[in-house]
Image (cartoon, rainbow, N blue to C red; front, side, top):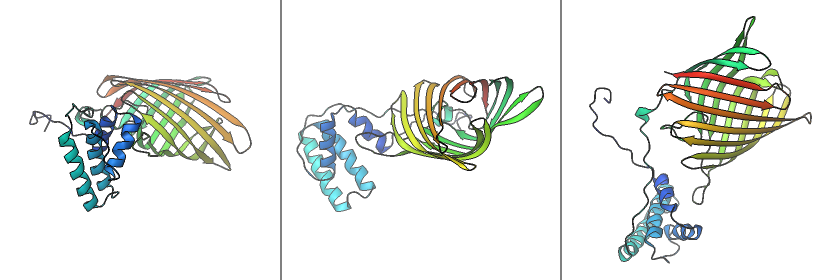
Length: 301
């Protein structure tokens, strides 16, 4: 429809959670706590228009999550509305409008580039679907990864090796703030390098994240299980977003069952050139393995 110019205009309504977060941005921690009490029908002790407006949205949200029964919700929202009508109206902050997913890149990706890890390789990669946290977040939810069957190969004049194979990778980094307290997590089933040996491994990590319009910070900890061994993993992730470009730092410290420790630092940079074409740089500094540098051109289809 859009290609045939049948759509003249489209817009997206913010989710209730995004609206609530936008309203809370202008309030102090104390005011947010008061709004939560009002929303749960505990007290009406404010004549602040913004506090009451937030309480009204929170009350609807809590009712939808079954934290308020329908009769209590009706009474609460009625009282809030009465108090709102008596206060001086103020301009409320609106949730930032989301970029249309009609303008984002496609989810399948093929990349071609140069890899240096002790020696030089040609690097080829295919990702059938769908998105990872180190790509731009243009019309995607920040901090989310869902990938299936991602495969990459390194080739030189006398060999072809599997560099990475991911059967499934899922990451959900959710903003931990004054109003919502979600846990972040990461899960993957991979075949890749572990201390210079290719092994199948299963990873599971839990943690907390803080996300804004321009940055993401997360701490995750968990375990990685692989052939006759186990490690305890810590990950610190920082990403900065500017339009469709992303700069990321990732630090991992792994404690293995044999008491050996491994430290890895990843520096990643992605720059979008066109809707379905970007340049990606990835530099890995490792304590026990050879440092690794990857530069690639990535095409989406």
